[in-house]
Image (cartoon, rainbow, N blue to C red; front, top):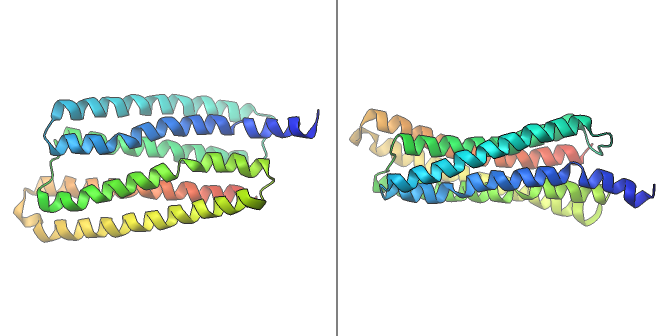
Length: 225
């Protein structure tokens, strides 16, 4: 077996499967924006359709996750820690889970925000989606790192990706604080139960960005071993 052929065993297995899983995860995350707009327009039929799509993609991602886990357990050659790779997969899947949680909360509660709160929630959600979409590069970067022996340009690009995720997640934290502050200032004007779920929604959106940043941290852990 030549060196390049032996390396291909590493690169193609299991990173392509992780990338395929992440593509499905991103379908969940990327639909949140349209669902949010539908809810604010009180188009509940459209909102339910978006939720059904997210739920279906989350189910597909979950099935893929279980199959990938079984394959990783049986892979003979792995250039990185098996347990850390499984952790990366679970983190990817958490993005789909979190997207479904946010979608269900908004649809089940028919969550239309008052304008003074919406102007803070909308950019918060957009920024959280941006972080999650940036995290899509993690599994691809890991494959490149393996191929180059964890050095050179690939290592530099991976460090830039990790830094980008940290910076973007920091922006989400800032917008999350702004949204909480505005809600705190006006919460007495709205039904208490609605306010409780609005706070929950803000927290869930922030969690979406947090899981995305954790993917970058996991890439750093994998590349340091």
